[in-house]
Length: 217
Length: 217
Image (cartoon, rainbow over all chains, first blue to last red; front, side):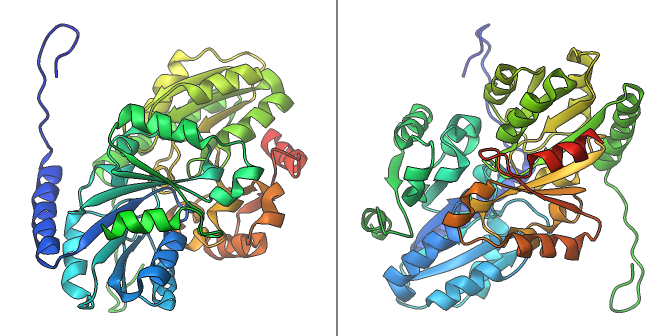
């Protein structure tokens, strides 16, 4: 791209990001060989990633497997196992995002059932740092919950300009909140014209059928 | 501390963190000379930092001034100015936390009224990365909102083990949520026995008097 004085700039990846890009490409090749559709779910803490995954597990059973990323605790993997799917927990011990190497290591270690078609990676709860790390996924999914407010897309453009899917969660709270889903989707499309938008509630089931159809492909 | 084999380990700060620590100490000295009580507010996006600050501005008027940290947009500083206080916006353009140098620069540039006694720094919305950066504040304040869920303290210990104040926000949503504030406070005290805990609602005013008394000192 050119700046206001007509000087051209080119992007150069840092060594860390270049190494991540190479490992992500290798991950994607391995996922393709296994016939897996791989999802990278990114949101703030508490936006409903694990709750949405529990719903998907009840829908897809062992056709979905999950890699959980958390700073600490095995709580989320335990929830997914209780819902009936294979889950592998990564504890980052302070790190604020997952990277392609951690996913490669997890993929080596976990036992994925032969009937599995979808591998969902729940990233660390963080709206910023995970957005620039390719994990080798096929779909980058940004979740935004109603209680976070409808002003977040333009405040966090590194994520929302990159997502393939925008999923607005906790739609059942709409009567109690001053939140405009149309504004959120319009601001996301202004950054990212190809984004596909979904509105869901894990509690009422709203929008889950359409999202499942999209993920099953 | 010693590990299981009795080997002793010592903590060594990275050059980045050591530089930040030095600048933070300089900031704190300058804040003390001005008689300012400086707050560092940390939470997920949408936990209610700006909304709480609007309430504090309506209470304290120009005795409070605000430094806003966001990845992008001037929206939060505009909200604080509309409420009646001086606000300085830092846009980090992708960076996931504030550091002491950015605060030093902001403090040089902003015009703080002579009647000001409290300087509130609203950190970038992120429950992880801001927790290890000392800005020179007197009080590190962690906010957790009801919709984020009551399991977050032990999932994000780098923040909750360091906060001076824990503020549970959006208490007005308690009837609609499966959230146990006692659990949150107990888990925070298990990491951090000296933490002082507050429960507030900007909407109903619950808990605001007690929090204001604490901040006014």
